[in-house]
Length: 113
Image 1: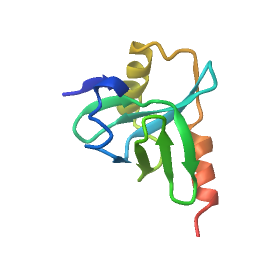
Image 2: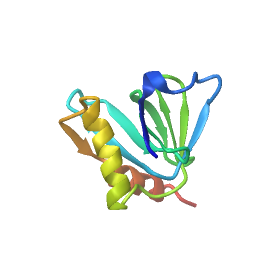
Image 3: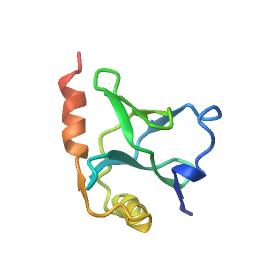
Image 4: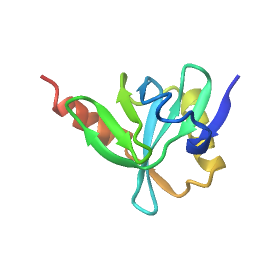
């Protein structure tokens, strides 16, 4: 089962200050903000607050909520999981948007040891 959530439905940052991501994409919205779309292992599809900082060497992003997201795997490519991420973004009105996930992943890889 999949549960769709946006940033308002996520637990408080104090309860979940850091999230490890294995299923994710990053979209740049029409207002130039960048946001993470993720499907968590719990079955929750989340669309984050805007990204305010990225540390490519540590493979982390911090959102405006203060939550830290750690990228544990390459961007999502499975067609079903990708569809869930995109449908969640469309559900909350995040179109039009540009998927910049591959560029972000390349940035992370360029900072590997």
